[in-house]
Image (tube, rainbow, N blue to C red):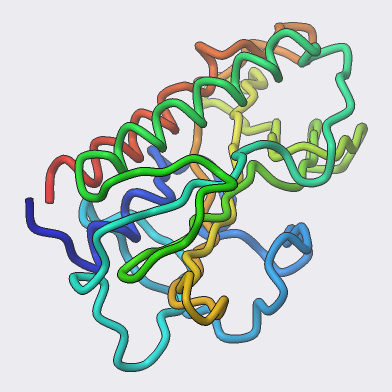
Amino acid sequence: MKRSSIAVTGLLFSALLLGGCASKVTEPEQYSGFLADYSRLQPATSPTGQPVLRWMAPGVNLDSYKHVIVQSIGFHPAPSPSEQIGAPALAQLQTYTSEQVKAAFGRRFQVHEAGAQPGPQTLILRAAITGVDTKAEGLKPYEVIPIALVVAATTSATGARDRTTELFIEAELLDASTGQPVLQVVRKGYGKELANKEQQVTLDTLKGVIDGIVRDIDKF
């Protein structure tokens, strides 16, 4: 099956519909530190036209790679459960993200688990759900937790407050032979709206963001 840099970029990150006055891309203050260097990132689009921040090494040809070693896909930094998103939901989100990302890469490359011996034509995927804010009326923070979920308030036409959920992901592909990054992407996606700050965030709230990642690569 044909591979391309655009397809792999779309696989790494996906965003759903954007709402309110929120930025369409991750802001510098929302970077988690998972990547060593954010200065090279530039605005780009996924295969489905969604906004993303991306950097690719000059002259790299991802078609020359046949294997991907997928390192553990988790949270960075470690999550702290809150009243609105508990430990079970975080665990389900991590498992679902890991399974879906690996499956999507498996349709383009031969996937190997972390710890596999790197060979020629091999990439290493580092990816994480990263950095979080929870924001209330007027978009002023009322709670900050170190996971990649943002709950932000938006005003409806009736004046009622709905709450949108944002999932942030950062990732990079490394050349296994050199250890140097060949592709880096930072992206956020929007999950389902919540009625208020008491409504619980579940996997179902956010799984559409991960499903969008799969759609991006499958549509290419």
